Amino acid sequence: MAAASRGLLARLRGLSLSAGGGPRLPLLPPSRLFSAEPFVSHSDDDGGGGGGRIIEARSGVMAPTSRRTGVIGVKCGMSAMWDKWGAKVPITVLWVDDNIVTQVKTTEKEGFFALQLGAGQKKEKHLTKPEVGHFRAQGVPLKRKLREFPVTEDALLPVGTTITVRHFVPGQFVDVTGITKGKGFAGVMKRHGFKGMPASHGASLSHRSGGSTGQRDAPGRVFKNRKMPGRMGGVQRTVKNVWVYQIDPARNLLYLKGQVPGPQGSFVFVKDSIFKKPDTALLPFPTYFTQEGEPEGLEPLIADLGDVDPFMAAD
Image (cartoon, rainbow, N blue to C red):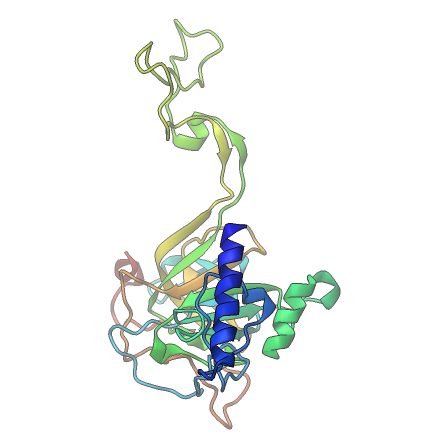
């Protein structure tokens, strides 16, 4: 109550100063009357989250410190392919389902640079009113999944820009984030890999037990972060340095070597690898823009490493 009174007095004092001949202050919206956040007036706000900034969809040169946006993919499942050496390559197939930029966040309004992407389609009756209002305010179709990717200033894209599977190139490394499969309540042997108690003499109905969990009277409690039974899976995990084996632009499919977290049909988020950075000269920056007259049906692009074994390159 005291904070509200101070805010009200400051507001009235500002209005009295402006009425006495001083500079007139802009009228604050009622929702920000008692807000602790600074008010920034954008006279040329374009309504698209750009903070009045003019953002053009054009190709540029990627700097070593540049950070591109990622994509939202749907895990279709796992398969296998055979390379020219006859080696079997385990493949996870991701579907980049109609990714578009739904909001642009800049330092002028939000204090940082980021792109919000939407994937899939969803009916209005299956969305909440705030979600529908957000999509209508940005002027974009209703999306099933939203995800925000931090980017650098030179990697900003205008609202409505389509992100396809050509955003990545075969042969590069990516980081994939997703929600792992939920295993339910599990014991210490399955959850943490404990070997269990003795299976013959001296153990009675405690073969899969975790053993003692603490001390005696000192300290008389169980320390935090102790490995004990509990819910297994269902958490966010990131698999780093996943090798892009092939892309299929015609069907917007992304083929990754190895496994990624999550069950079939779940959403995963793919972005450029942090540790094994790809060659900036090969990546489309800030993303791949479809050229005029480009045919719709494109052949799949496979990583070409010459005479280098892909297993040796990906390890």
